[in-house]
Image (cartoon, rainbow, N blue to C red; front, side):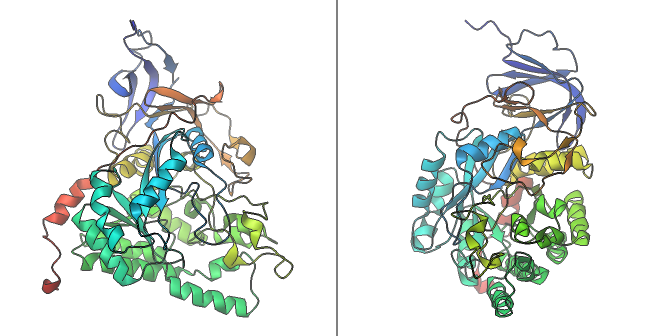
Length: 500
């Protein structure tokens, strides 16, 4: 018979949620937060394990809802360097307890459920943290659209992603409208990668005709106007289908940011995400000598310092509801499946259009932003945990510290000043990627403990990763419950083409 009153107590911590900062002890029973008690009052409680936070911050576990792991090579060259095992191992070492990754549907495959089944097989028993899936829709034909109801009502998948670029996944405007209409009918939240693919292809051809192949020209092929135009078009298509909610992913451009803000101010259900690469990297990182800039090739590309400042402002003022990693890793020094697959005799510094597109960042997301000093701690929790949980149907089990309701997913940080500044190196990370684009940066804090459903899965000072790769489990998600989003939309009535 279990004689312990609690399974875990975190005492002497400063608890931070999206709305409050207060000193509490946290008691855990089973997988849930049992209650919050006055600071220090549970220091001698009858608990299986007691953690003394020593005045460090205690936050809800990180929720990263934009993660690419072990996906088929849909974009041409390159294979992801992270599996579900290595990617989620990296996640928990960086304070992330829940991810939502992608189940990709190739254009030749008519079924979304088949894509979901294949992705489940890759992730099952291979995840250190809890996980869910977005469907990545490449072929929105009759069969795929007919499966939307099954996805949300039976499979626990309540979100999807569509692309306005990339030949392997790009949807035309009429296809996007069909997806939005069906998504509206079934309360499925739609993420949009907004870049104008046709203009991108034209600019790429123009650059190549001038023999401009180096990594730095990746950003020339994707000037800000591509993102701003596609963002405006996505918002227009959303408004056409009776203001169907959408989220613009990985926004980098001030013009796109401005258009998003205008739509939000007009009352449209338009949400947006940005990522650390647009807060900590700039275009100059792509312009490093030789092939070095390929380490920072992602889409959209990092912009200039002035754009970076606009994005920070957008995080602070609520234009961006979420701050995700867009972890999409490829090894750098790898000519078989990594960044260097595009190097040959004809292109000794590579060919920018063939560089595998994406960067690692699942482990560094929280430490970089936490250490930046540019966000209030409540805003930090809001955009990295609470809002993602709300937008993607995980709240309040994830993203909060509500006794009796929230899973005991916690991050315990070091007390201010107790961790000497850490110089970030790839060797200290837990992914399977041979570089980090943030090499050499100074980090002021790092997760000391990561706790998932009441179990300590990361202890930085005593063993590092403590759990096995099968501890993470699939989480079925309901519709978004962010600010009664769907109730507000449904008050407008069904889409009626005759009323246009």
